[in-house]
Amino acid sequence: MSCEKIQIKNLENKQPYFKEFCEIKGLKNGDYYKSIEFIIFADSLSISERTKIIQKWHNNNAE
Image 1 (cartoon, rainbow, N blue to C red):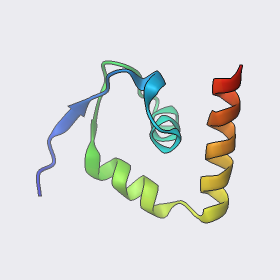
Image 2 (image 1 turned 90 degrees about the vertical axis):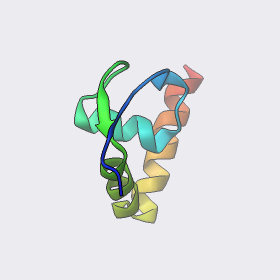
Image 3 (image 1 turned 45 degrees about the horizontal axis):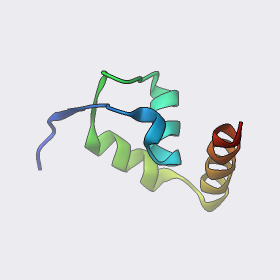
Image 4 (image 1 turned 180 degrees about the horizontal axis):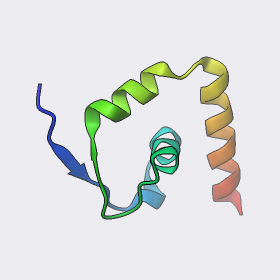
């Protein structure tokens, strides 16, 4: 499996889990991340955490 880094582009248009991952890691447009780190983050979320993240980012987009 490759562990190459990927550049973040158009963060504002990404899915809620990815936005949350970036916020927690302090990442922004132009920064690089390893996809495996995001996969591990997403896999570790409980149903409750997933629901809260979706609600949080849905509310942020409504403003």
